[in-house]
Length: 183
Length: 130
Image (tube, rainbow over all chains, first blue to last red; front, side):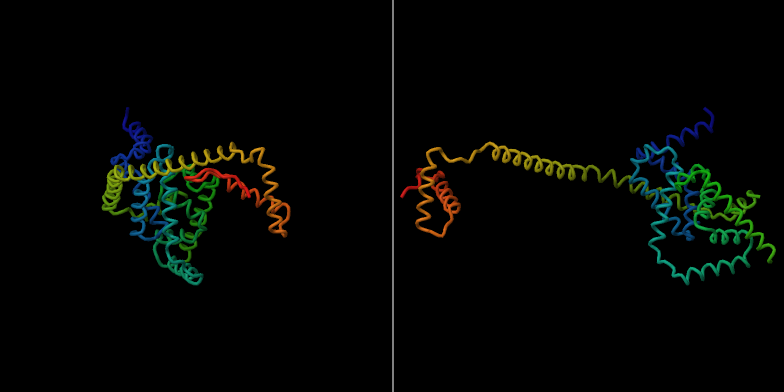
């Protein structure tokens, strides 16, 4: 058995080992998905500390409900669905911005777009996308999920996920293009 | 063209601090160990509680079954020779209390009769007589 096949086999057996409470399996799950989960949480929450807390809470929740993992076929989708729930809970606990505060934030982002470099402009432009398109971009680029996995996480068809991604990238590109020509 | 945008995003990624791995795995270890510690203590406690509740439920069901069977099989009938006495008692009650209707006097006579025929502790059963 070559290294790749062994790795695939390890990945397939990971949900079962997690369900058994194998501590090494949790370390393996972190090594496989920890960075992607953190990046995704950071993108949703915008705060490194909160993103770290969300990842930690996710793993603790995973231990508590590990019996369910035995029947999980795609661990990546399962983890990102759970992360979305964690992030949603944290977002709800935050004080909501008033309409004025929200429009101020959008205005600040627009101002920011004019003065930061291209990478930051892209991150700021992402914030301005419709939530459903923004989410697909985050899950595709930061979480490194396939369209099939994104479809499972968002409970939409793979085609919908792919078209949302395409529209989102078109919008981002157009915005960056405007930025380049305005500076 | 998609690749350029995706590359830009990738370049702007923030990776987690190295300590996060230790922190997460320490939390996992604590959770696993606390479950293992908690299991021997908590399981019997909750097991005993469930067994007690199950036993109580079984007793209540049995009691209801017995009570229902008894209610179905016990016939509350007067002996055949009591009907004359009952009519006589009702008539006597109507003499004493003329305002009583026929039904009321019969009902009261029946209750008196049943009360008088019920077995008493430490004494013989006595029929209602004048």
